[in-house]
Length: 319
Image 1 (cartoon, rainbow, N blue to C red):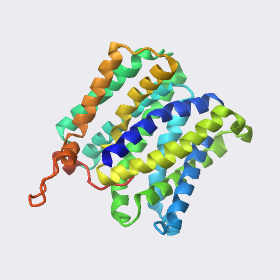
Image 2: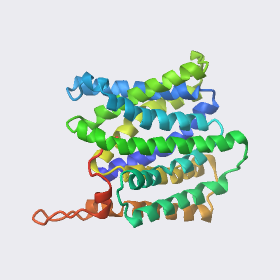
Image 3: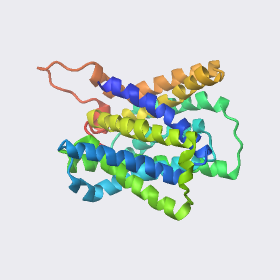
Image 4: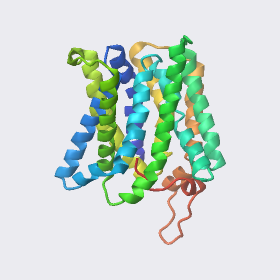
């Protein structure tokens, strides 16, 4: 189930960068559309869990949900949506691949947790593979807005890493709550903050929803990207650790290249294949400890030994 959920997360999230780009290019207000996506998805999921008796409305009154939503949803996606007005979806995916690396570095710098050397090497190799995969096909126009857009995506990934680390406290505080309910609550708060930002920065006309590109992009991102993809992602974090699910950021560029090759006739070169191989190698190195535990479980009577990765990253953690 873990590997199936991970595969679905990679497939879903690998297409969301392009879906965001299509919507933004078609005239969708970035902050409003992001807020609508996450607030609606979070509200539907939370009401569903509440009807099943697995979520309490008191959860929405906790400040931890506000802080998590501000970092993971508001900070990450306000940056990404705004930046994709000026950078390509492929480059946005490349820059977003710094997320796992930033988690490792922030845990080492602020929490004094010693990261395994192979995990750090794996992050570098994986990010190098993403660059090999995407950069040859990019026609970069180094304008001021392009540079600012790249910087904004990186700032968003800092928010993402901080939110992932903060979720360790959330896990302890709400150990009895469903990961789906926690995910839904933080998405609602993040969506509400995006609405607030849109109110002060954007002139929104409801007519933008009449376009097939904008409506289709919003529907796909809300239902598939947020409700399905993010729920699976947070379930994976709860079952493994905060770094393993985050490595979808290494797999999404190959998926984008494959979609382009199959449906748009984009060329695939030997550099592309080298990039795919490098990404897979980096992903395996980053999660060597966790993958070893998943694939080679100890016998019931034998003592369970934690790998270096398990010591560095909590086994149960909810974003």
